[in-house]
Length: 359
Image (cartoon, rainbow, N blue to C red):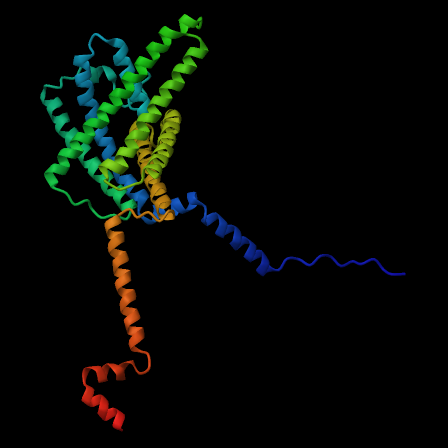
């Protein structure tokens, strides 16, 4: 009687296992997200973002002093709009404004009571202009480096004036965000009672929160697009620009929602407790700057995948250079063919050609 077979299926060979693992690694490395992080690291993105975060911290404190000094004069009697401004700043940079529990970096009452026309206000204004222009210049250089572009060649004084205008536009965008959020909250509070919904109901609060987030998302997206296209002057096609800026706007919006927990977590470390707010703000600004440059890398990789050059003039010059090299190689190959040299000699010196034929 035949014995039952005890043979088992042969084990997979090590070579096949290695081949399968290599295939998985190859598929993973081809994913766009992975290629973006690889591209970002190869362009010194993390190091550039660290530098930007320090400059952003200094510029923010100077901007707070100047902006709230002016707000204290203009909004003395409008407590609602003043509170909306404080709330907008707190949402934009969690942990920056002290909300009364001592966890913030700056007391809003001190800011609102500051005198912009005194020597401290003048000094803060000078520091604000210097640090803001410095951050914008560094941001432009970092974004252009991500796109493999050189330093922007422009008139120095004119470029600084443009950077100052861009900084003012950034501040106006924040003010517009605050005004629109306050106006939307007021409009919802007026409209919903007409249809029978209490303005303090969960529906009204949720609707106001959603509309406010959409306004912030739109402004963040527009600011990122302006940084990539206007500030850095990179010729990015509109679809790539909107895609990258929208991804960045969503990422920064989610970061703002988690910002309080992120910055508050630094205070749980006893080694950092004495200066936890400053550490938390540095962490916050670093992550924001990393996101700005990461989204620039996303756009750059997408343009490379589509064959769109970030510098059309350099790409055209490289194409012409390749064509010239190809033409020279073709001429050299033709010259190496048998008889070409002899025919060329006969054409240049017929007598020598006749002597060669006589031989």
